[in-house]
Amino acid sequence: MKLSLCLLLPVVCLFGCISPTYTRPTLDEPIPQAYREDSGGQAARPADAMPKGQWWLAFADPTLAELVTQAATANQNIATAAANLRSARAQAASARSAFFPTVTTSGSALRGTRSNTSRATYSGGISAQWEIGFWNALPAYEAARATVQATAADYASMRLLVQAETAQNYFQLRTLDMQHALYESTIAAYAKAVQLTRSQFREGMVTAADVAQAETQLASAEAQLASLDGQRAALEHSLAVLLGRLPSSFSLPRGELTATLPNIPAGLPGELLERRPDIAGAERRVAAANEMIGVARAAWFPSVTLGADRALTGDWLRAPATAWSLGPSAALTLFEGGKRLADSDAAWADYEAVAAEYRQTVLQAFQDVEDSLSYLNWLAKQAEAQDRAVASSETALRLSLSQYRGGMTTYLQVVSTQTAALTNRRQAIEIQGQRLAHAVSLIKALGGGFQASELQEE
Image 1 (cartoon, rainbow, N blue to C red):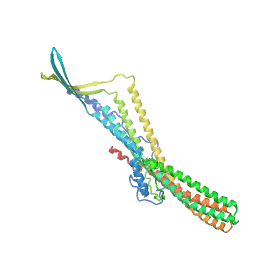
Image 2: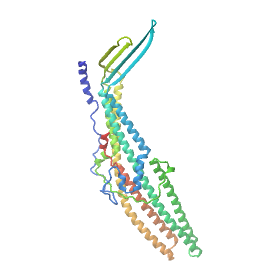
Image 3: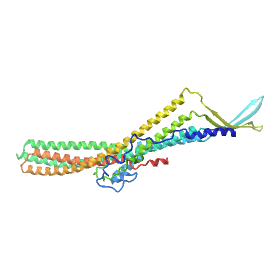
Image 4: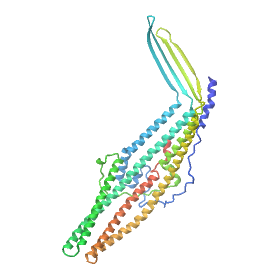
Protein backbone atom coordinates (compact mmCIF):
# COMPACT_ATOMS: atom_id res chain seq x y z
CA MET A 1 0.00 0.00 0.00
CA LYS A 2 2.80 2.44 0.91
CA LEU A 3 4.57 1.54 -2.32
CA SER A 4 1.46 2.36 -4.35
CA LEU A 5 1.09 5.78 -2.74
CA CYS A 6 4.77 6.52 -3.29
CA LEU A 7 4.40 5.72 -6.97
CA LEU A 8 1.50 8.18 -7.16
CA LEU A 9 3.39 11.10 -5.63
CA PRO A 10 5.49 11.99 -8.70
CA VAL A 11 2.37 11.99 -10.84
CA VAL A 12 0.48 14.19 -8.38
CA CYS A 13 3.36 16.66 -8.33
CA LEU A 14 2.99 17.17 -12.08
CA PHE A 15 -0.40 18.88 -11.75
CA GLY A 16 1.18 22.26 -11.05
CA CYS A 17 2.71 22.48 -14.54
CA ILE A 18 -0.25 21.29 -16.61
CA SER A 19 -1.56 24.70 -17.63
CA PRO A 20 0.76 27.16 -19.43
CA THR A 21 2.16 29.99 -17.35
CA TYR A 22 -0.40 32.76 -17.68
CA THR A 23 0.47 36.30 -18.70
CA ARG A 24 -1.99 39.01 -19.69
CA PRO A 25 -2.02 39.59 -23.47
CA THR A 26 -0.38 42.81 -24.63
CA LEU A 27 -1.09 45.18 -27.52
CA ASP A 28 1.20 45.44 -30.52
CA GLU A 29 2.18 48.97 -29.46
CA PRO A 30 2.82 50.48 -26.03
CA ILE A 31 0.06 52.28 -24.15
CA PRO A 32 0.53 56.07 -24.44
CA GLN A 33 1.40 58.26 -21.49
CA ALA A 34 -1.58 60.58 -22.06
CA TYR A 35 -4.83 60.69 -23.99
CA ARG A 36 -4.52 62.56 -27.27
CA GLU A 37 -7.77 64.51 -26.76
CA ASP A 38 -7.32 65.24 -23.05
CA SER A 39 -7.05 68.99 -22.51
CA GLY A 40 -6.71 68.74 -18.75
CA GLY A 41 -10.29 68.41 -17.58
CA GLN A 42 -13.66 68.90 -19.20
CA ALA A 43 -15.64 71.18 -16.95
CA ALA A 44 -17.90 74.18 -16.99
CA ARG A 45 -18.36 74.12 -13.21
CA PRO A 46 -15.80 71.77 -11.64
CA ALA A 47 -16.71 69.35 -8.88
CA ASP A 48 -14.24 68.51 -6.14
CA ALA A 49 -14.08 64.83 -7.07
CA MET A 50 -16.06 62.12 -8.77
CA PRO A 51 -17.97 60.04 -6.21
CA LYS A 52 -16.58 56.51 -6.34
CA GLY A 53 -19.21 54.20 -7.75
CA GLN A 54 -22.12 56.65 -7.42
CA TRP A 55 -20.78 58.88 -10.18
CA TRP A 56 -24.22 60.28 -11.03
CA LEU A 57 -24.21 62.27 -7.78
CA ALA A 58 -21.60 64.57 -9.35
CA PHE A 59 -24.34 66.00 -11.60
CA ALA A 60 -26.18 67.33 -8.52
CA ASP A 61 -29.63 66.39 -9.82
CA PRO A 62 -31.88 64.65 -7.24
CA THR A 63 -34.29 63.35 -9.88
CA LEU A 64 -31.43 61.75 -11.80
CA ALA A 65 -30.13 60.11 -8.61
CA GLU A 66 -33.57 58.68 -7.86
CA LEU A 67 -34.00 57.28 -11.37
CA VAL A 68 -30.54 55.66 -11.46
CA THR A 69 -31.16 54.07 -8.06
CA GLN A 70 -34.46 52.62 -9.25
CA ALA A 71 -32.85 51.26 -12.41
CA ALA A 72 -30.09 49.54 -10.43
CA THR A 73 -32.64 47.58 -8.40
CA ALA A 74 -35.41 46.91 -10.95
CA ASN A 75 -33.80 46.65 -14.39
CA GLN A 76 -34.26 43.17 -15.83
CA ASN A 77 -30.97 43.10 -17.75
CA ILE A 78 -29.18 43.70 -14.44
CA ALA A 79 -31.28 40.93 -12.88
CA THR A 80 -30.21 38.59 -15.69
CA ALA A 81 -26.53 39.45 -15.14
CA ALA A 82 -26.93 38.85 -11.41
CA ALA A 83 -28.48 35.41 -12.05
CA ASN A 84 -25.63 34.55 -14.43
CA LEU A 85 -23.16 35.44 -11.69
CA ARG A 86 -24.91 33.17 -9.19
CA SER A 87 -24.86 30.37 -11.76
CA ALA A 88 -21.13 30.84 -12.37
CA ARG A 89 -20.45 30.68 -8.65
CA ALA A 90 -22.46 27.46 -8.37
CA GLN A 91 -20.50 25.94 -11.25
CA ALA A 92 -17.24 26.86 -9.54
CA ALA A 93 -18.45 25.15 -6.38
CA SER A 94 -19.32 22.09 -8.46
CA ALA A 95 -15.81 22.07 -9.97
CA ARG A 96 -14.31 22.31 -6.47
CA SER A 97 -16.17 19.15 -5.42
CA ALA A 98 -13.74 17.14 -7.57
CA PHE A 99 -11.13 17.60 -4.82
CA PHE A 100 -13.16 15.50 -2.37
CA PRO A 101 -13.95 11.77 -2.28
CA THR A 102 -17.34 10.39 -3.23
CA VAL A 103 -18.97 8.30 -0.51
CA THR A 104 -21.97 6.06 -1.23
CA THR A 105 -23.92 3.57 0.82
CA SER A 106 -26.33 0.77 -0.06
CA GLY A 107 -28.45 -1.74 1.76
CA SER A 108 -31.10 -4.39 1.16
CA ALA A 109 -33.32 -6.77 3.14
CA LEU A 110 -34.97 -9.86 1.61
CA ARG A 111 -37.32 -12.52 2.94
CA GLY A 112 -37.94 -15.81 1.20
CA THR A 113 -38.67 -19.51 1.68
CA ARG A 114 -36.59 -22.56 0.93
CA SER A 115 -37.55 -26.16 1.79
CA ASN A 116 -40.59 -24.86 3.64
CA THR A 117 -38.29 -22.71 5.76
CA SER A 118 -38.76 -18.96 5.93
CA ARG A 119 -35.56 -16.99 6.01
CA ALA A 120 -34.68 -13.28 6.04
CA THR A 121 -31.33 -11.97 4.75
CA TYR A 122 -29.84 -8.55 4.67
CA SER A 123 -26.80 -6.83 3.24
CA GLY A 124 -25.29 -3.38 3.48
CA GLY A 125 -22.15 -1.55 2.69
CA ILE A 126 -20.35 1.72 2.32
CA SER A 127 -18.02 2.71 -0.49
CA ALA A 128 -15.64 5.64 -0.91
CA GLN A 129 -14.00 6.57 -4.20
CA TRP A 130 -11.45 9.34 -4.65
CA GLU A 131 -10.14 10.08 -8.09
CA ILE A 132 -6.66 11.49 -7.64
CA GLY A 133 -6.79 13.76 -10.67
CA PHE A 134 -5.44 17.12 -9.54
CA TRP A 135 -3.86 17.49 -12.99
CA ASN A 136 -7.43 17.61 -14.33
CA ALA A 137 -9.48 18.98 -11.43
CA LEU A 138 -7.22 21.90 -10.52
CA PRO A 139 -7.11 23.61 -13.95
CA ALA A 140 -10.85 23.00 -14.34
CA TYR A 141 -11.47 24.65 -10.99
CA GLU A 142 -9.15 27.57 -11.77
CA ALA A 143 -10.95 28.03 -15.09
CA ALA A 144 -14.28 28.08 -13.24
CA ARG A 145 -12.95 30.66 -10.77
CA ALA A 146 -11.74 32.87 -13.60
CA THR A 147 -15.14 32.51 -15.24
CA VAL A 148 -16.80 33.64 -12.01
CA GLN A 149 -14.61 36.75 -12.01
CA ALA A 150 -15.41 37.39 -15.68
CA THR A 151 -19.12 37.04 -14.97
CA ALA A 152 -18.80 39.42 -12.03
CA ALA A 153 -17.21 41.92 -14.42
CA ASP A 154 -20.11 41.36 -16.84
CA TYR A 155 -22.49 42.18 -14.00
CA ALA A 156 -20.59 45.39 -13.27
CA SER A 157 -20.60 46.25 -16.99
CA MET A 158 -24.35 45.79 -17.21
CA ARG A 159 -24.96 47.94 -14.15
CA LEU A 160 -22.78 50.69 -15.61
CA LEU A 161 -24.48 50.42 -19.00
CA VAL A 162 -27.98 50.69 -17.52
CA GLN A 163 -26.96 53.56 -15.24
CA ALA A 164 -25.40 55.45 -18.15
CA GLU A 165 -28.39 54.88 -20.44
CA THR A 166 -30.74 56.05 -17.70
CA ALA A 167 -28.72 59.25 -17.20
CA GLN A 168 -28.43 59.96 -20.91
CA ASN A 169 -32.13 59.36 -21.55
CA TYR A 170 -32.97 61.61 -18.63
CA PHE A 171 -30.77 64.43 -19.94
CA GLN A 172 -32.28 64.08 -23.42
CA LEU A 173 -35.75 64.22 -21.92
CA ARG A 174 -34.92 67.34 -19.90
CA THR A 175 -33.44 68.90 -23.05
CA LEU A 176 -36.77 68.36 -24.77
CA ASP A 177 -38.55 69.87 -21.76
CA MET A 178 -36.44 73.02 -22.09
CA GLN A 179 -37.15 73.18 -25.81
CA HIS A 180 -40.85 72.61 -25.12
CA ALA A 181 -40.88 75.62 -22.79
CA LEU A 182 -39.03 77.65 -25.44
CA TYR A 183 -41.58 76.78 -28.09
CA GLU A 184 -44.51 77.49 -25.79
CA SER A 185 -43.26 81.04 -25.17
CA THR A 186 -42.40 81.43 -28.85
CA ILE A 187 -45.85 80.26 -29.94
CA ALA A 188 -47.43 82.76 -27.57
CA ALA A 189 -45.33 85.54 -29.15
CA TYR A 190 -46.12 84.31 -32.65
CA ALA A 191 -49.84 84.23 -31.85
CA LYS A 192 -49.68 87.88 -30.79
CA ALA A 193 -47.83 88.69 -34.02
CA VAL A 194 -50.60 87.05 -36.05
CA GLN A 195 -53.20 89.14 -34.24
CA LEU A 196 -51.12 92.27 -34.85
CA THR A 197 -50.67 91.64 -38.57
CA ARG A 198 -54.33 90.81 -39.03
CA SER A 199 -55.27 94.08 -37.30
CA GLN A 200 -52.79 96.01 -39.44
CA PHE A 201 -54.11 94.28 -42.57
CA ARG A 202 -57.64 95.38 -41.76
CA GLU A 203 -56.35 98.93 -41.39
CA GLY A 204 -54.50 98.65 -44.70
CA MET A 205 -51.08 98.98 -43.13
CA VAL A 206 -49.72 95.58 -44.32
CA THR A 207 -50.42 93.20 -47.14
CA ALA A 208 -52.07 89.78 -47.09
CA ALA A 209 -48.63 88.29 -47.62
CA ASP A 210 -47.55 89.59 -44.21
CA VAL A 211 -50.54 87.89 -42.58
CA ALA A 212 -49.78 84.63 -44.39
CA GLN A 213 -46.14 84.74 -43.30
CA ALA A 214 -47.13 85.29 -39.66
CA GLU A 215 -49.67 82.45 -39.77
CA THR A 216 -47.14 80.15 -41.46
CA GLN A 217 -44.57 80.86 -38.80
CA LEU A 218 -47.08 80.14 -36.01
CA ALA A 219 -48.22 76.87 -37.59
CA SER A 220 -44.60 75.75 -38.10
CA ALA A 221 -43.79 76.38 -34.44
CA GLU A 222 -46.89 74.44 -33.35
CA ALA A 223 -45.82 71.52 -35.55
CA GLN A 224 -42.35 71.58 -33.98
CA LEU A 225 -43.92 71.55 -30.53
CA ALA A 226 -45.94 68.44 -31.41
CA SER A 227 -42.76 66.78 -32.69
CA LEU A 228 -41.01 67.51 -29.39
CA ASP A 229 -43.91 65.94 -27.50
CA GLY A 230 -43.60 62.79 -29.60
CA GLN A 231 -39.86 62.54 -28.97
CA ARG A 232 -40.40 63.05 -25.24
CA ALA A 233 -43.00 60.29 -25.10
CA ALA A 234 -40.54 57.83 -26.69
CA LEU A 235 -37.82 58.77 -24.20
CA GLU A 236 -40.26 58.42 -21.32
CA HIS A 237 -41.16 54.91 -22.55
CA SER A 238 -37.45 54.03 -22.76
CA LEU A 239 -36.87 55.27 -19.22
CA ALA A 240 -39.80 53.17 -17.99
CA VAL A 241 -38.26 49.98 -19.41
CA LEU A 242 -34.85 50.85 -17.92
CA LEU A 243 -36.58 51.19 -14.56
CA GLY A 244 -38.35 47.84 -14.96
CA ARG A 245 -41.72 49.55 -15.38
CA LEU A 246 -44.49 49.34 -17.96
CA PRO A 247 -44.50 52.47 -20.15
CA SER A 248 -48.22 52.91 -19.50
CA SER A 249 -47.65 53.16 -15.74
CA PHE A 250 -44.69 55.56 -15.77
CA SER A 251 -44.56 59.30 -16.27
CA LEU A 252 -42.01 61.95 -15.40
CA PRO A 253 -43.23 65.52 -14.82
CA ARG A 254 -41.65 68.19 -16.97
CA GLY A 255 -38.71 70.03 -15.49
CA GLU A 256 -35.68 72.14 -16.26
CA LEU A 257 -32.21 71.01 -17.22
CA THR A 258 -30.51 71.96 -13.96
CA ALA A 259 -27.76 69.32 -13.73
CA THR A 260 -24.20 70.51 -13.10
CA LEU A 261 -21.53 69.58 -15.62
CA PRO A 262 -18.85 67.89 -13.47
CA ASN A 263 -15.11 67.86 -13.84
CA ILE A 264 -14.08 64.40 -15.03
CA PRO A 265 -10.37 63.61 -14.65
CA ALA A 266 -9.41 61.16 -17.38
CA GLY A 267 -6.35 59.93 -15.50
CA LEU A 268 -3.52 57.98 -17.12
CA PRO A 269 -4.25 55.69 -20.07
CA GLY A 270 -2.47 52.82 -18.35
CA GLU A 271 -5.04 52.93 -15.56
CA LEU A 272 -7.86 52.18 -18.01
CA LEU A 273 -6.99 48.46 -18.00
CA GLU A 274 -7.96 48.33 -14.32
CA ARG A 275 -10.94 50.69 -14.50
CA ARG A 276 -13.07 49.16 -17.24
CA PRO A 277 -15.23 46.17 -16.20
CA ASP A 278 -15.46 44.91 -19.80
CA ILE A 279 -11.65 44.84 -20.02
CA ALA A 280 -11.44 43.02 -16.69
CA GLY A 281 -14.03 40.48 -17.87
CA ALA A 282 -12.22 39.90 -21.16
CA GLU A 283 -8.91 39.40 -19.34
CA ARG A 284 -10.44 36.87 -16.94
CA ARG A 285 -11.83 34.92 -19.90
CA VAL A 286 -8.31 34.73 -21.30
CA ALA A 287 -7.16 33.31 -17.96
CA ALA A 288 -9.98 30.75 -18.06
CA ALA A 289 -9.05 29.72 -21.61
CA ASN A 290 -5.44 29.31 -20.47
CA GLU A 291 -6.57 26.88 -17.77
CA MET A 292 -8.68 24.95 -20.28
CA ILE A 293 -5.46 24.17 -22.14
CA GLY A 294 -4.37 22.43 -18.95
CA VAL A 295 -7.65 20.50 -18.90
CA ALA A 296 -6.98 19.32 -22.45
CA ARG A 297 -3.41 18.31 -21.55
CA ALA A 298 -4.66 16.35 -18.53
CA ALA A 299 -6.27 13.83 -20.87
CA TRP A 300 -2.79 12.41 -21.48
CA PHE A 301 -2.40 11.51 -17.80
CA PRO A 302 -3.74 8.34 -16.20
CA SER A 303 -6.93 8.28 -14.19
CA VAL A 304 -5.97 7.18 -10.67
CA THR A 305 -8.65 6.22 -8.16
CA LEU A 306 -8.23 5.36 -4.50
CA GLY A 307 -11.13 3.22 -3.35
CA ALA A 308 -12.36 1.75 -0.07
CA ASP A 309 -15.32 -0.60 0.44
CA ARG A 310 -16.86 -2.29 3.46
CA ALA A 311 -19.70 -4.79 3.11
CA LEU A 312 -21.89 -6.53 5.69
CA THR A 313 -24.07 -9.57 4.83
CA GLY A 314 -25.98 -12.19 6.84
CA ASP A 315 -29.37 -13.24 8.09
CA TRP A 316 -31.27 -12.52 11.25
CA LEU A 317 -30.23 -15.80 12.91
CA ARG A 318 -26.50 -15.82 12.23
CA ALA A 319 -23.65 -13.48 12.91
CA PRO A 320 -23.03 -11.18 9.93
CA ALA A 321 -20.09 -11.65 7.59
CA THR A 322 -17.98 -8.62 6.80
CA ALA A 323 -15.62 -7.83 3.98
CA TRP A 324 -13.51 -4.80 3.14
CA SER A 325 -11.14 -3.65 0.47
CA LEU A 326 -8.78 -0.69 0.08
CA GLY A 327 -6.39 0.23 -2.68
CA PRO A 328 -5.64 2.34 -5.73
CA SER A 329 -6.47 1.66 -9.34
CA ALA A 330 -5.29 3.35 -12.49
CA ALA A 331 -6.46 3.59 -16.07
CA LEU A 332 -4.78 5.17 -19.09
CA THR A 333 -6.34 5.64 -22.49
CA LEU A 334 -3.88 4.41 -25.14
CA PHE A 335 -5.65 5.29 -28.38
CA GLU A 336 -8.56 7.58 -29.27
CA GLY A 337 -8.00 8.26 -32.95
CA GLY A 338 -6.38 11.67 -32.40
CA LYS A 339 -9.08 13.04 -30.09
CA ARG A 340 -6.67 14.31 -27.44
CA LEU A 341 -4.51 16.11 -30.01
CA ALA A 342 -7.60 17.68 -31.53
CA ASP A 343 -8.89 18.77 -28.12
CA SER A 344 -5.52 20.36 -27.32
CA ASP A 345 -5.46 22.22 -30.64
CA ALA A 346 -9.02 23.43 -30.03
CA ALA A 347 -8.09 24.68 -26.54
CA TRP A 348 -5.17 26.66 -27.96
CA ALA A 349 -7.37 28.11 -30.70
CA ASP A 350 -9.98 29.12 -28.12
CA TYR A 351 -7.26 30.82 -26.09
CA GLU A 352 -6.02 32.77 -29.11
CA ALA A 353 -9.58 33.83 -29.93
CA VAL A 354 -10.35 35.22 -26.48
CA ALA A 355 -6.91 36.86 -26.35
CA ALA A 356 -7.75 38.66 -29.59
CA GLU A 357 -11.14 39.64 -28.15
CA TYR A 358 -9.35 41.06 -25.12
CA ARG A 359 -7.05 43.19 -27.30
CA GLN A 360 -10.03 44.41 -29.31
CA THR A 361 -11.85 45.32 -26.10
CA VAL A 362 -8.85 47.35 -24.98
CA LEU A 363 -8.61 49.14 -28.32
CA GLN A 364 -12.34 49.92 -28.24
CA ALA A 365 -12.02 51.25 -24.69
CA PHE A 366 -9.32 53.71 -25.71
CA GLN A 367 -11.44 54.81 -28.66
CA ASP A 368 -14.41 55.38 -26.33
CA VAL A 369 -12.34 57.64 -24.08
CA GLU A 370 -10.77 59.59 -26.93
CA ASP A 371 -14.18 60.04 -28.61
CA SER A 372 -15.79 61.32 -25.42
CA LEU A 373 -12.90 63.71 -24.71
CA SER A 374 -13.04 64.99 -28.27
CA TYR A 375 -16.80 65.57 -28.14
CA LEU A 376 -16.53 67.43 -24.84
CA ASN A 377 -13.69 69.59 -26.18
CA TRP A 378 -15.48 70.80 -29.29
CA LEU A 379 -18.86 71.03 -27.54
CA ALA A 380 -17.29 73.44 -25.01
CA LYS A 381 -16.08 75.60 -27.88
CA GLN A 382 -19.41 75.26 -29.66
CA ALA A 383 -21.31 76.28 -26.53
CA GLU A 384 -19.24 79.45 -26.17
CA ALA A 385 -19.81 80.38 -29.81
CA GLN A 386 -23.50 79.49 -29.60
CA ASP A 387 -23.99 81.77 -26.60
CA ARG A 388 -22.63 84.62 -28.70
CA ALA A 389 -24.93 83.65 -31.55
CA VAL A 390 -27.96 83.68 -29.22
CA ALA A 391 -27.06 87.13 -27.93
CA SER A 392 -26.55 88.51 -31.45
CA SER A 393 -29.77 86.99 -32.80
CA GLU A 394 -31.82 88.44 -29.94
CA THR A 395 -30.34 91.88 -30.60
CA ALA A 396 -31.15 91.54 -34.29
CA LEU A 397 -34.72 90.52 -33.43
CA ARG A 398 -35.27 93.55 -31.20
CA LEU A 399 -33.97 95.88 -33.91
CA SER A 400 -36.04 94.20 -36.59
CA LEU A 401 -39.25 94.49 -34.57
CA SER A 402 -38.51 98.14 -33.85
CA GLN A 403 -37.89 98.87 -37.53
CA TYR A 404 -41.06 97.03 -38.54
CA ARG A 405 -43.20 99.01 -36.13
CA GLY A 406 -41.67 102.17 -37.55
CA GLY A 407 -42.46 101.07 -41.07
CA MET A 408 -38.80 100.85 -42.03
CA THR A 409 -38.80 97.16 -43.04
CA THR A 410 -41.13 94.38 -44.13
CA TYR A 411 -42.55 91.61 -42.03
CA LEU A 412 -40.44 89.14 -44.01
CA GLN A 413 -37.38 90.58 -42.29
CA VAL A 414 -39.08 90.12 -38.92
CA VAL A 415 -39.86 86.49 -39.74
CA SER A 416 -36.25 85.90 -40.75
CA THR A 417 -34.82 87.31 -37.51
CA GLN A 418 -37.43 85.50 -35.39
CA THR A 419 -36.53 82.19 -37.05
CA ALA A 420 -32.82 82.80 -36.49
CA ALA A 421 -33.37 83.67 -32.83
CA LEU A 422 -35.50 80.58 -32.22
CA THR A 423 -33.01 78.32 -34.00
CA ASN A 424 -30.08 79.68 -32.01
CA ARG A 425 -31.86 79.37 -28.66
CA ARG A 426 -32.93 75.80 -29.44
CA GLN A 427 -29.40 74.92 -30.56
CA ALA A 428 -27.98 76.32 -27.30
CA ILE A 429 -30.30 74.05 -25.30
CA GLU A 430 -29.31 71.04 -27.42
CA ILE A 431 -25.61 71.73 -26.85
CA GLN A 432 -26.19 71.94 -23.11
CA GLY A 433 -27.91 68.54 -23.15
CA GLN A 434 -25.23 67.04 -25.39
CA ARG A 435 -22.46 68.14 -23.05
CA LEU A 436 -24.16 66.40 -20.13
CA ALA A 437 -24.81 63.26 -22.21
CA HIS A 438 -21.19 63.09 -23.38
CA ALA A 439 -19.99 63.65 -19.81
CA VAL A 440 -21.90 60.47 -18.96
CA SER A 441 -20.26 58.76 -21.96
CA LEU A 442 -16.82 59.73 -20.67
CA ILE A 443 -17.60 58.43 -17.18
CA LYS A 444 -18.82 55.17 -18.72
CA ALA A 445 -15.73 54.98 -20.95
CA LEU A 446 -13.53 55.39 -17.86
CA GLY A 447 -15.31 52.59 -16.01
CA GLY A 448 -17.62 54.55 -13.69
CA GLY A 449 -15.47 54.01 -10.60
CA PHE A 450 -14.90 50.27 -11.16
CA GLN A 451 -11.59 48.70 -10.12
CA ALA A 452 -10.41 45.29 -11.33
CA SER A 453 -9.14 44.54 -7.81
CA GLU A 454 -12.78 44.12 -6.78
CA LEU A 455 -12.87 40.83 -8.72
CA GLN A 456 -10.22 39.27 -6.47
CA GLU A 457 -12.95 38.93 -3.84
CA GLU A 458 -14.85 36.49 -6.06
